[in-house]
Image (cartoon, rainbow, N blue to C red; front, side):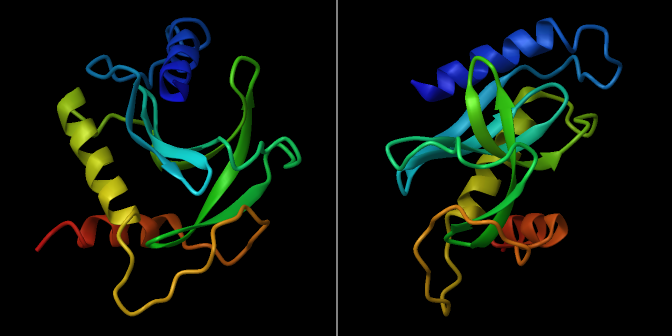
Length: 160
């Protein structure tokens, strides 16, 4: 399963490259939250002691190998277009990520981080009622929503 591989890769990064880095939150561990199939790819949130990222991993919809590392890529989700950055890890390959939180000092425990991740995914996978959705496909885009709008939209729909 791709989520297990993702956790394994980032757990190795935590124990190797991140060892002794002061921004690590000792109350958190590496966890993949709410990964699901989305238009031929795997979408979910990765929690680590140093960041929480929305992750889009290649699936049956094709690899992201044609995308240049570091590029910004817009990807349509039910809540709107989200801008991801193209990243690469040797044991994982090319992936897309969107930073949600970094550093993770705001989180007192894993349960709170997991709850925020699940609420964020719920918001992202809920389409605004009046908007028609376009087909999802990675494309270089400069019209993606800002991080502030992204988080505000994801959390405001979850609160009554």
